[in-house]
Length: 231
Ligand code: SF4
Image 1 (cartoon, rainbow, N blue to C red):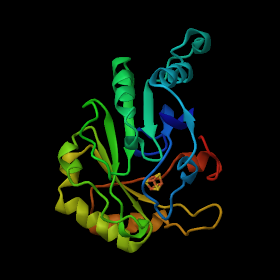
Image 2 (cartoon, rainbow, N blue to C red):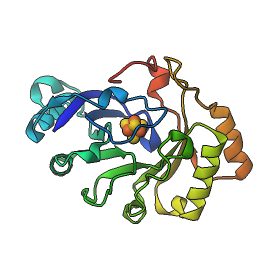
Image 3 (cartoon, protein in one colour):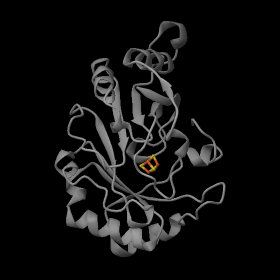
């Protein structure tokens, strides 16, 4: 499998935001969202076997004796990208991580079918909004695969995106299906390629409509420079 990076940081989004986590970023994506902040993962990467990825994860999480010291091991691993479901080896990797006792999350664009993942994997599934430039890419069979440990995320750049997210959430009863529905405003691009959406506006809209959804802010962009990779 091709891997862009494996690193330890804090979880930046969702209901586990702020928790220590090891991230495995798989290379490649078949979408091109206008506001994508991980375009560096589209190409290249290092070819690694599942065993090599596992060894690096064990090292970073502190499972390996030489690096663990007195620290408690990090139990949380996230598979991300790019789009992690494009590579077949993601399935044996997820199975191995689960078998080793890790809590495994996957961040996916929602365009690929998620039903082949082990049931234990916590899915954070995007639904692309109109101004992502990738509207109508959601694989509708994924709705039936969602359960009470999963999260659905809408990344919002405009009021139009917000209205789409609000209406999709209501139409498909998402709040009852999953642990959390996240509305995440896009941040300004550090290089000025796109303009984000003010979080305050999203809060005002959520409150005005009385939506039982959670505002999602990417915590790591407050901790580190938003242009920094591998955090
Ligand atoms: S799906 Fe994710 S990685 Fe792919 S272009 Fe969109 S934001 Fe970037």
